[in-house]
Image (cartoon, rainbow over all chains, first blue to last red; front, side, top):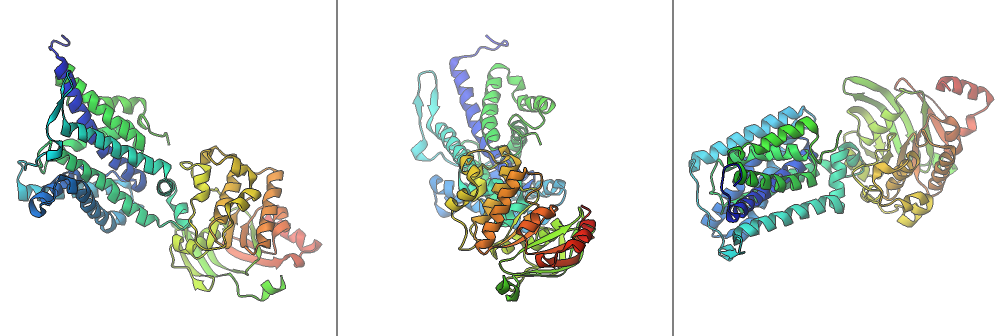
Amino acid sequence: MIFGHVITVQQLFGQLLVGLINGAFYALLSLGLAVIFGMLNIVNFAHGALYMMGAFCAYFLLHEFGLNYWWALIGAPLIVGAFGAVIERVLIARLRGLDPLYGLLLTFGLALVIQGLFQNFFGASGLPYAIPPQLSGARNLGFMFLPNYRAWVIAFSAVVCFATWFAIEKTRLGAYLRAATENPTIARAFGLNVPRMITLTYGFGVGLAALAGVLAAPINQVRPGMGADIIAVVFAVVVIGGMGSILGSIITGFALGVVEGLTKVFYPEASNTVVFVIMAVVLLIKPAGLFGKVA
Amino acid sequence: MATAERAEPALTVAGLNAWYGESHILHGVDFEVRPGEVVTLLGRNGAGKTTTLKAIMGIVGKRTGSVAFAGRETIGLSSDRIARLGMAICPEERAIFASLNVRENLMLPPRVADGGLPLDRIFTLFPNLAERLGSGGAKLSGGEQQMLAIARILRTGARFLMLDEPTEGLAPVIVRQIGATIAELKREGFTILLVEQNFNFARTVSDRYYVMEHGRIGAGFANADLDANNMEQLHVRLGV
C-alpha cells in the first residue's frame, strides 16, 4: 500500500501505458511547437486547434470520401499542413520583425476562431472514429493486457519523432533549416529562400500536430475541444524541455507523460497539476529548460 | 590589367543611400569595380564601409539609388536573388553557424553558377579546414573561422566576392595566408571588393582604392598613383 491506495501490478502497468500514450502526443505536439518556435520565433497558440483539425480531417476523409485510417495518416497532415502554410503566408508572415507578442495574439485568436467554428457546426460532444481493424485487439503480456492500437501509437510516434530529429540534425535539408534558424539574414545572403523555408517549416510543424490528431481520433473522441484540453500541458512540456530544443521536446514529452501516469497511480489527486509543478520548479532552477541552450 | 580597365564594369554603384532603422548611414555612394580587379574601400571606423557592402548585398534595412551588377539593376532585389546572380559576401563577423559543423558550414551556400572551386582546391588553399570537418562551427579559432568564411563562398560559383575586414584580429602568418589566397583568386579571374583598415595589407593585393568618409566616397586612386606625398595625406585621412 502506498499513500493509502492499494495498487496492483495491472493498475501500475495500465497507467504506465496511458502515460506513454499521452507522452507520445505530448512529444509529437511539443516537437511541432519547438520546430515552429525555433524558425519563426512565435509561440503557435493555434497548435491545439490544428491537432483537432487533424482528427476532424480523418473523420471527414472516412465519412465523406471513404478513405480509411491509413489514408488519413498521410492525408490529414498534408491537408492541414497545407492550410497551415497558407495561414503563415497570408497572416503570420505580416508580423515578421515585430514583437513576438503579435504572433502570440494572432495564433491565439486563430485558435479561438477555429475551435469556435467547429463547435458551431459539430457541437461540443464527440464524434466516433473506429480503431482500424488491422490494429484492433490486444496481447496478453502476463502482467498486463496491451491493446494493439495503443502499442502502435507509441511506436509510430517514437519513429516519427526520431525521424524528424534525424532529418533536422543529420541531413543537408536540416542544415539549411538550422542555419536559417540561427542567422536568417546571412543564410538568405547565400541564396537560400528563407521566407519559403519559414512557410514550409510552419506547415511541417502543423502537419505534425495534425498527425497527432489522427492518432488520437480512435482513442479520444473527435471533439472541437480536444485541442484546448491538451494544449496547456503541451506548453508546459515545451517550457520544461526548452523552447527550440528538438531532442528536448521529444524526451520531455514522453517522460512527462510517464510521470503523469505514475502520479495517477500513486497520488491521483496531483495528476492534473504535477506537470505544472515541475514546470514551476524548472523555471526557478533552469529557466532555459532542461535541454535549452542558455542564450 | 589593361584589358580590365577598358572592360564593362562588373559593379556600378551610383547614388547609394542606406539606413539602419532611422540612422542614415550612406549619403550617395558612387564607385565602380571592373572585372578581375581587386578594389579596396578604405576609411576610418564608422565611415560606412561595412554598410556599403551590406547595402550592395541587400542585407541592410533600407536602400535607395542604383547598384548595377553584371548589367542588371539590383537595388530592388532580395538578398537571395542577388546571391544567385553570382555575388557573395564574407561578413566582418564571419557569421559561422554554431549549430552546424565545419563540413555543413562549408557546404551550406548553394551552387549559384558553374566555375566554383572544387573541394580539393579549397582544401589545398585551406589545409586546416580538412582536418576540422567534424568540429562544431563555434569551436574553431578566429583564423580558422575566417578561412571557413572565405572557403564556403568559393564553392558556390560566385565570381564577385565582397570581403569585409578578412585580416582583422588575426596573426601575421594567417594574414599572409589570406593575402596569398586573394592573390590566387585574382589570378583565377575573381573580382573582389575588399574592406580593410590595414592599408599595408591592402597594398599587397589591391589594384585600386576608394577612401570613404562619413558615408560618402572621398577619393579614389590606383596603386600607380601612390607616391611619398600623397601617402602622407592618405595616412592622415585614414587616421593611421
